[in-house]
Amino acid sequence: MVTHGGGSFGIGILADGTAAAVVATSPGVAGVFTGNVDVRGTLTKTDNRFKIDHPADPENRYLAHSTVESPEMKNFYDGVVSLDEHGGATVELPDWFEPLNETYRYQLTPIGGPAPNLHVSRKLADRHFTIAGGVPRAEVCWQITGVRHDAWARTHPLVVEENKKPEERGYYLHPEVQGQPAERSLGALQHKQFSRP
Image (cartoon, one colour):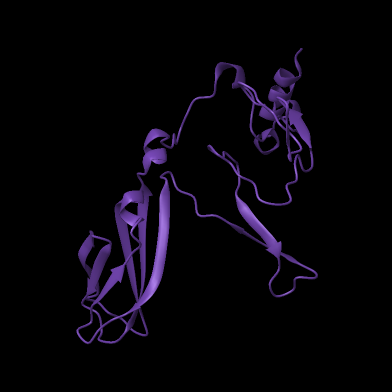
């Protein structure tokens, strides 16, 4: 429990700063969270993965997956649709799809056999896109990606490449993979800056 400004909060750390409010550096694990973590801003990381008890052997093993990454704020959606007697289908998306996304890209894959004429016959509009040219009653895997254009994405665009600040030059996020000593880490620099009186 932390007391701040006359009130009590059920939190372990309450930090407020103009730069890094908390800096943790460790050769092992710098922080452990058990429970939900709410980030109300941009989460910048070197790697992103989930790690769970292995579904086939949860007592003895772990399973890890990485995420799909892109130089765009891209969203990914997919599904399976059954074609009608004419070899076509309509895919319906949620009402939030178009307010969230733009710049659509499509992929179609027939199941059970080739469908050389399978195609998107009508691009996305009013939450729907249509498929045509398939084999009647066949199943088709569909995929559509969109690039975010919601208010947050428009006001916080992804900067794909950026120069390091002058004080960060010569320092690395992970110096060990660059063949550099640990003291050249950005974490060590931030720790020194944070520790100054």
